[in-house]
Length: 183
Image 1 (cartoon, rainbow, N blue to C red):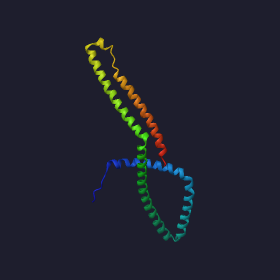
Image 2: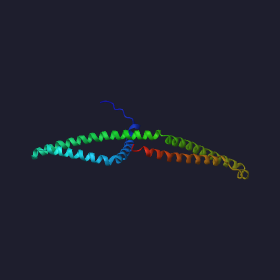
Image 3: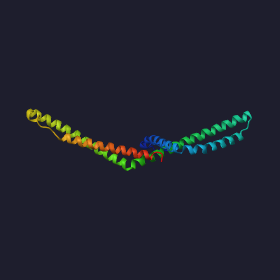
Image 4: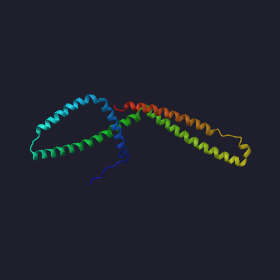
């Protein structure tokens, strides 16, 4: 038995990409729907007429033809589903990659990293200020009570600013991504 190569990351993200692909395809189809309906109706009408003309009207022959047609339709349906799933996954992956490459998405990722780093710094500075204040309070309760640590407050303000920038960039990235859906 041949060894199959299994990449967990690829297999884990494939359904997500397929979902994105389905959404992208749905938007595209809605945009083209009116023109396509007439073309499809004419094609279906001709197909039905052709199949009807080929029917043998004897009961045994009808059963055999129906069985053969159903088997053919089933096989075609399975092949179509498998092909469509792969196509949708590829389409979704392409759309996600286009969105990831857009400038506003990159700016959002960069802002988020900055905000995260500033939040960690604020946490560390707050913890240090709390410890030093507690230790100093134990030594000199009256003197230390009058002093304040400004490092955590300044750091918290920087963290807030970075978070606001990240939110702004994320809004821009979402708007840019929305214009790519259905293209």
